[in-house]
Image 1 (cartoon, rainbow, N blue to C red):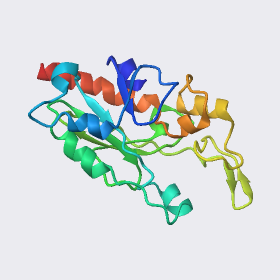
Image 2 (spheres, one colour):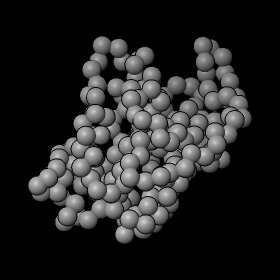
Image 3 (cartoon, one colour):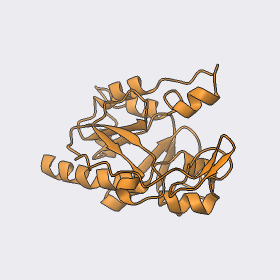
Image 4 (cartoon, one colour):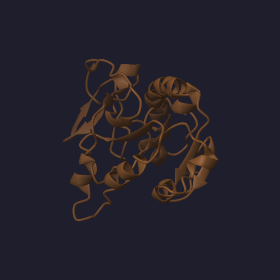
Length: 210
């Protein structure tokens, strides 16, 4: 949604069905789609995308998953995604959670955009310059239960089913997402304000390249 608001026509790709996705959607393995872009038959010659954003699954890097799902193996998809994006001639963005092995060209936080989530995310960006905004000090705690104690705060923890984390309407308002009706979908999202900020600068990079 953020890239749409910045001026892009958006096509989404995911291996799982996404019935609430608000734009054109292709259900497919994103890595297989990217592999078609390896010479000599680049798929982008027919689809003509101006930029690519990729968000590999985060469970292999997320501290929450590491702590609560011990013994489970998660795919490390950042290295192959990075390798395949390198073939694309235009700007590319790869996003993931804190703790992921991304080059930290950009770090965004919900407080930078006045949101009721912190939601730190790393972005690895190629063939475009996206300026790092200053990291605004957090205004307090994330609301919810911690070790039997209830904490109040200006932020929601948009993940899991623990107590005190707010209902789906709280999450929708906190993230700036009004079209999703499922907590799982919202928990796996990043705020549209993040990609709108990036997208506005990618548009300029694409225009300059043209």
